[in-house]
Image 1 (cartoon, one colour):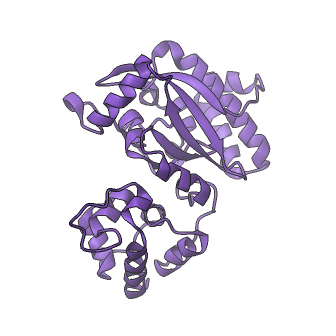
Image 2 (tube, rainbow, N blue to C red):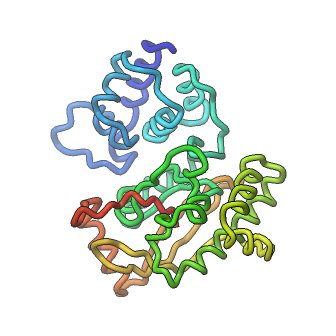
Image 3 (cartoon, rainbow, N blue to C red):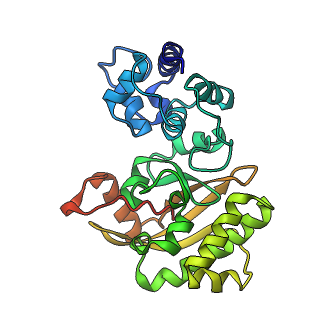
Length: 289
């Protein structure tokens, strides 16, 4: 690992990002045109001390997940992202798949502009890649960032806690939608080993999944109406929309409610509450919707 070159590269990229580019206020007392170290750390979900050590050419070799988060925070293009991994002496992960995938620039650019509604980018296996603050406030952060548990589809059929975000009476609907969507993804990916392993494991661990898989229903989820259980605001009725990347590997999700509806009022209040831990309630459920 080339500590000095990695540090110089991170500093140079940070200097080129303007706060407005990533939805941060400029402020009158800013002494540097680019981002502050603590702002990069915040965007990447890292501690400020850890990121500072990286920029100073110190510390342990960053993990694949940390590098992927830094690439997103610094809005790196494909070549720059690959260079970051090379400097850290880590193998470059696949461009479109997995929780360490590089967020496609078109989706990330749109996400940066969705500042008044919850929005996030996920993979076709429902692995969270990046969220805006309102999405974190609404659905929480994912409890896992790598391995099978990074996929909501996997958690939905193996971990009862993954279903807490939706009312119990809505669970059968979401199960059907998840399986039909996975059928479409499996067909598009062909003989992809990651999908095949997931299907085999879920058939073994969940009778519900196996029965739904055998119906052979196929439908990509492009939009849905759903009710989300929030610990402070109660049940919020929202419409969830999806925009697919050109290759279908990633999706931008955003949530809306009709003007004047109770859901719209709750979304406005969500922006005030933010990610506060109301009453000690754990919001790290990470349901991608």
